[in-house]
Figure 1 (cartoon, one colour):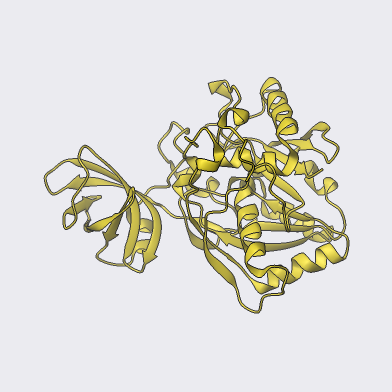
Figure 2 (cartoon, one colour; figure 1 turned 135 degrees about the vertical axis):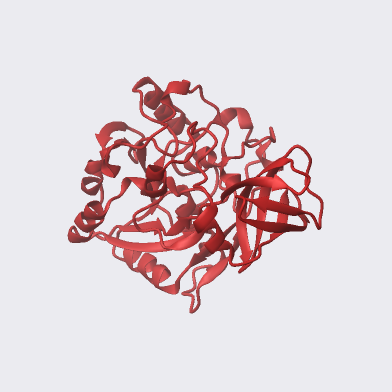
Length: 346
């Protein structure tokens, strides 16, 4: 990592009213800001994306599924608690963030949704290790709420259960959506397939840490949160085939980038025979040499966030600053329910 990178290099002013609180009426009806390989900006619509892709390009999607990770309840003493599952660690166990007036102690019970209790087994850093009475996913599906990001001001509603989820989500485990994928509907995926654009999937279970601001002024001092990922041998074969044919690997979302680049570091150019999986703390900042990713479909990211640093690594700090200033001036919609960017690396 470049030791001279400072947090102040990744800031911008965003009017509050540009933070999208609801999704577009239809998934594909967002705007698309295109930052091309020469650094030029083009105002487009998301429906224009197929025309920006080339024969032999490969789209890589993150197929993680958002779980209903938010639970409310009380401690045995009566104090209110809010539980946000960060990671399911076993059939009946999970790590969670807990909001309470006083942190619950190991051995204490939390009565959740007036329906069941979970026992606090201990702590792992800021997270609490919880034991549930039955299968965690079943309990969340029945009693949990969709964990909308902190900048979305309304409580999760029925519409959010569908719209804060990609149409291809299949592997449950994320507590935040891979939001670049929210723009794709079945018709768009079919159109891309008919155009001969290959598609494949990786899995990275997005954690709540994705919303945490970077606090270290020198980026070399930042400790990245861990997220679980997996990349299949079939996906690696498709990447190698696309590149051999002169195509580009186009990641859909920064989470796909992190999964792909984490896998690339593990297999070191060799064709794997088994799924590459594990925890990744990969922190991608300007100066990073990408192994597999050539272009990116993404949303607009929070100031001073690791995601803004990642897109700056792909396109350059100055082009991204210019793109974001243009997006603010042109009143694009920002963050999870907002508009999209298509970034081609120089």
